[in-house]
Amino acid sequence: MQKKEQLYEGKAKKVFATDDPNLYIVDYKDDATAFNGQKKGQIAGKGVINNVMSNHMFQLLEQQGVPTHFVEQLSERETVVKKVSIVPLEVIIRNISAGSFAKRYGVEEGIVFKAPTIEFSYKNDDLGDPLINDYHALALGLATEDEINEIKAMAFKVNEVMKDYFDHLNVTLVDFKLEFGKTPDGKIILADEISPDTCRLWDKTTGEKLDKDRFRRDLGGVEEAYQEIMRRVMGK
Ligand code: TMP
Ligand code: ASP
Image 1: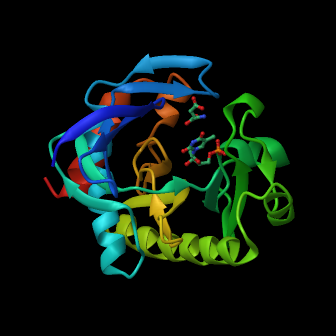
Image 2: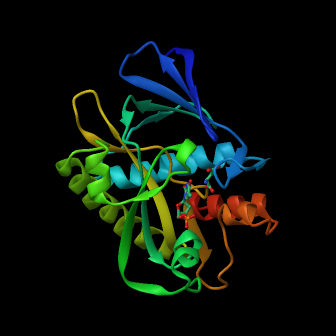
């Protein structure tokens, strides 16, 4: 596998072409941003943790029948993934009120929902990723009706697998964001990453935040929180 030219640099990852037209290499950075890039910083070791943890989660999900873009980890920060075109939707599942949900609807954090919620944002930095519903996604041509239904079913399945998994690690899965991609033959698969950048993870006993909220809200101990999650996920 040969790493070729850089195709894209995002806030937390770079994407490279390879000598195989169906495969990309992602390279995870320590750079952290919040609030649509308005707040910038670095979280030492984050790139390694997000790479290793995402790959671990993708393999777990594959075993449970969820197709993902994961192919092979190359190094601490680099992973081979299937080439997809990203569906421009941020798919957010919530089990407990927190973050923008608590703010938008004027409720406290920590309310356990009777059933998980799903929401879509239109992935567009210039517009600040606005919240949209299924009909808006259809109207904007972001996905077909079948694709939206498939994405919803997969997202809820991911929630069931991950909720149970984190529960065993004494971690509450509060909410998380997923992104999906379309392969050249038109299949929808799970893409992007699953990490403390994209999930709210609270210690089940103490309620301590073990995710990027520590960076977003200047709570301190951000590196330690990422390391703690990594330690629990990787069992060391
Ligand atoms: P929110 O409460 O700010 O809407 O975030 C919900 C979840 O989505 C939370 O686990 C963090 C994740 N998320 C991202 O991964 N990327 C983003 O750009 C945003 C806004 C949230
Ligand atoms: N909004 C993202 C976050 O808070 C990052 C960013 O948009 O810069 O996780």
